Length: 209
Image (cartoon, rainbow, N blue to C red; front, side, top):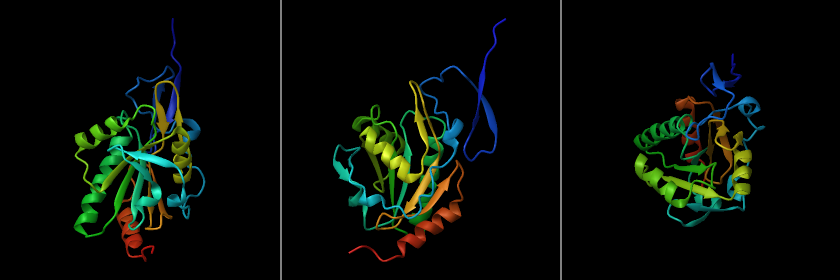
């Protein structure tokens, strides 16, 4: 008789455990927060994102620096295009916030940065924008592997890459107009009212000169 071994994964923010086969998951499956990846990486509030020197590329192929996103608050999250479990929920949360912020006339940007720059090319990011009809408020970025890991660490986003999948947490951070992290939300279903309040508070602060 053959037997199967199972890994127990704690799905961030869902409050339940599921059994997953120990064999590698199919490439299209995003397995969230396996093992130690379920724990956030330290305290991130107060970190200065816009001071990071790394070079990025947006979904139009333009070179970007995080410092270019000064002048208004940003909602920042990380994803990868072939994720079909955690990332679509995170993106939908951000879309809901976008509508609510627009209704409240709060100006904020949304930065969505890939965890998988080796696969998520400029063309892939551009297709992701088109398929999800993301507005100009959104910026999709890709960087080097080192820059990606450095940003994930700064955002407190745990992730692990193996041959066929990326295990990662669901995190949304809010920065003020200077790029300082002022709020950090984890889990698949963060408190939308608290997120909206954090962005609103950041938007009322004095803009950098």
